[in-house]
Amino acid sequence: MSTPSPASGSVPAADHASAPASKDVVEIERALNRIVYLTGRVRQHERLMALAGVSLDRAAVALLRQIADSEPMRPGELAARLAVEASHVTRQVQQLQKGGYLTRVPDPDDRRAQRIQLTAAGQEAIDRIRMASCRGMEVALAHWSPEELRQLSTLFHRMVDDFLRTDITLEGEGASSQPA
Image (cartoon, rainbow, N blue to C red; front, side, top):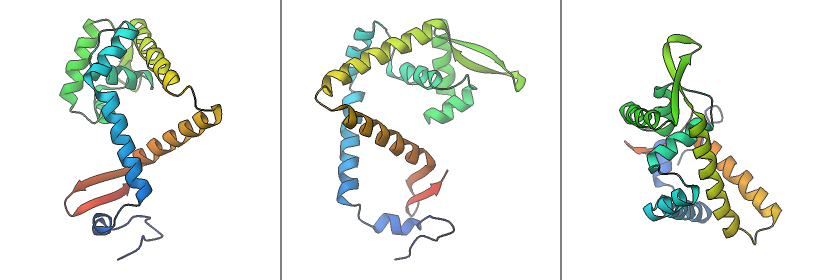
């Protein structure tokens, strides 16, 4: 089995495919799948929307959250960040514009292009959704100490940042890891 090259820091794809994952990584993967399942359930989304007093589907919420967490961006960039087809973003943006949640603004780098940004109603909707979601988390994590909450937050952000820096694919010869 080959080892990572000091210069590249990457391991050949065949090594990733045949190497067993550590027990800790297996447990992290299991926990993440449980979180995705719990947060992705239709009933959970409907409950969150009812608590927030907002009527949006999951795709619309994901799109609004992404825009709320960044500066106005072009539709293509938004599609890339959400890992969806540009046509999906275009349709969703049109619906959210009609609903008053989004607006298009000129791109300061290219006046022929446009960027998408939240309207006041879009920002209010995201604020209400986040508030409702955070209230639920506070109830679930009420017995955690402030230090445990800080550690979890730090480690979650670190993990997501590492995932974003690493392109993990499961096609071709096996898994590969490439710096982004």
